[in-house]
Length: 314
View 1 (tube, rainbow, N blue to C red):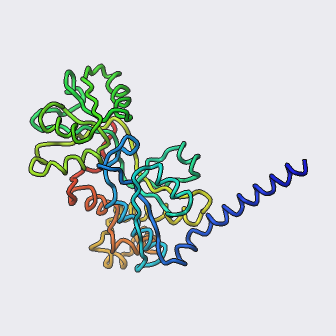
View 2 (cartoon, one colour):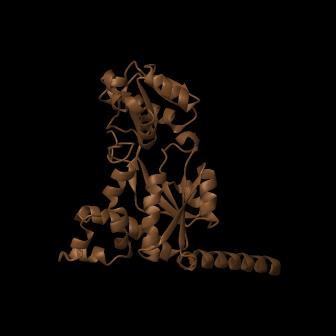
View 3 (cartoon, rainbow, N blue to C red):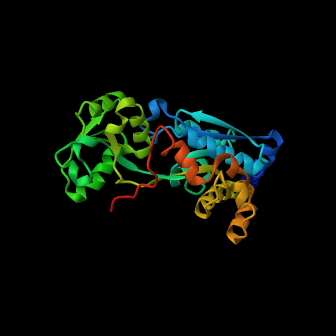
């Protein structure tokens, strides 16, 4: 029994030491004058375990915003790309990075890697890339047509779950390689490619002179919110991450932009005054508000041209 008690005390000591280290995230950032962020960048911008597009540009902006919130206007940020989530989450757990940007909240990952998630950066979801000439406007238009996807991913299961209740008799067309699937779409052998909308936007951007010939439908069949992930056990760091994302979202809601930030500092509105007092407000002149970040990195001012906030199809 004594050995059992000593073992329990040792384990408790290890847990306390771990929690103490976790509680010092901001101290480490201040000591090194650097925030290190991570993001997943799968080979060929798509894999069977990572179904979003390359989000590195978005991750750079949010990492910089967090660095400014933590360290001030001259805060330095470093972004590390990982080939898969199996590498990215262990790096977060072992404190090689302080935050992992662009993950869909998942209870299994939260438990396995002891992480928590911040507010949503943007809404992704499984959508459809179609040739405009095909005249496809809604899901029902896929009846009798081939929908292409990468085999072994959730895309197939999501199609069955969404199209089955609607009694839409589509033709499944799985592929093992992304390049072959892209060629099938361009040559008319696929009525659509289905994947997360961010991945579809990356695919379309590689079509160069034919980009305008293809559209991403407004409808999605899953909801995949993307958020920052950070280790549990550090309330101060978690609050700063959450507060930074919310500040940039509030700046959009209140009309505070990169261009008008200085003028807005004198605005008497109480909500704007509160916003200006947050540590993350210092990041707005550098990266803009949430809408500006999306437009620049994924949306209308980026090569991807992705429309924001697709609605989940009823």
